Image (cartoon, rainbow, N blue to C red; front, side, top):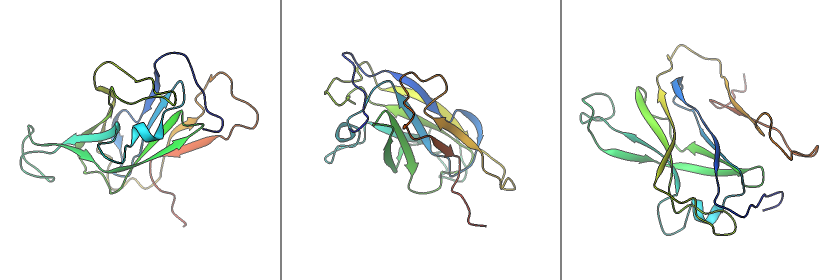
Length: 169
């Protein structure tokens, strides 16, 4: 990719967002790697995405019940930023309130040279969607490139990732 980064080893996780609790139903996921990730590997046309968001639905459905329900992969669009070193997971629908979500990286995910992430399936961050409905102001999830990133040129775009869509009003 243009502006991409390549190393001579496996891709490494640098950071993942969000984490903890207090997130709105519109919160995206952000995964930052130390090198460019293969978009074709991350989202193969013939199979399951290798970077994905999942949750465990309660046995009583999405609005109640006990834990121990069905693990569900949340449909999300993968958006690649900063030379494909950052993957933004934008859920296609609002997340279900009061559930815990995980962002997962599959071991088969590869960098642009075809070197796999390796190891086992890895949960890179966990967060809970439990922000009060009365909270209307958005928050900055992260700024990219991350603080203290090496090799960032003057022409590198800076991205602010928000926890919800921006309203026109």
